[in-house]
Image (cartoon, rainbow, N blue to C red; front, side):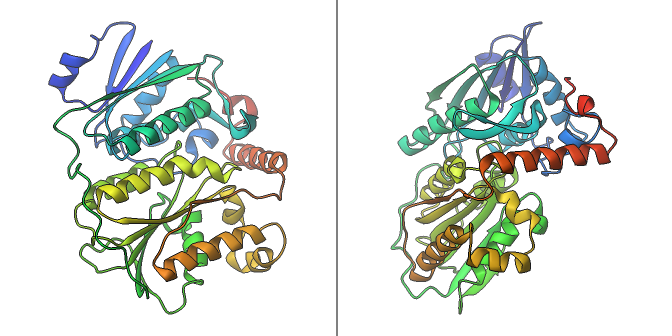
Length: 378
């Protein structure tokens, strides 16, 4: 089956998409599909492989399980999907198994299905060259995570681009000394996620700075720090929707910094999400500061800040602490630097993967799922 996920109007879909049939199915993205909450219920509760949120996102999981090709038609937002399309994509992670293996030199989830799907991306709108390059990297990352057979990318220019699609001119970057910084926590888990812990660690390195938590339209901040987890190689749909909503009311010239974490081992897997935020900054007329991509975020999730303090000061997380110092230094100076990526050297990747596998097996067992039931196919 050829599954087409799109954000077109009904009239546009009839005009541009191949007719639906026994072998072609459309799935229209709509705000009625709620964002993924990061609960992992699709992996550790029955029925495994299916999202536990009771809306149309469950239907997409079943359709994707039967598809041999997935075509995504979406308005381009900053080098990625529209918020509605991204919400649907984020809800499909049960398509893979929770377990890990090394694939093409990186840590990835093990496939649930033997079939290798074909991916095709069709993005439309007023798309800058930087956004096109980000899209190409994004699609390649998705191919690896999907264990797909192939991927293609096509762009379609059109006049009805996203609101504020023209890049706003950058005002002069924030001048030191920096006095007020906004922390934006984009994690769907809220205060219980790794993003909160990263922001707390960073705040301790910004003495004398007024920290504003959350969006405050019109607030005169010198810098904005966005902390969020990697969701299917990109920005979580809940944060993407907020970025689009606030694109035109940001203080011109303020600096943007990113703290992105993922559950895989390699910090470099956060590169595409950082690039998407950088493209948003250009659209919003903001100056880019620096991004820090943190791998093996679950290490931070499993340890309290009190317990981590000596671990950060010495041992395998010392490089992570230096990277955080570098980011904090650029924020204090009101300037920017090259994006940084932290991959731990302890535990080794194989040990981290084994620990992840065990934690998912135990969670499934606690919910009454056998190993076989966790591997079920829709």
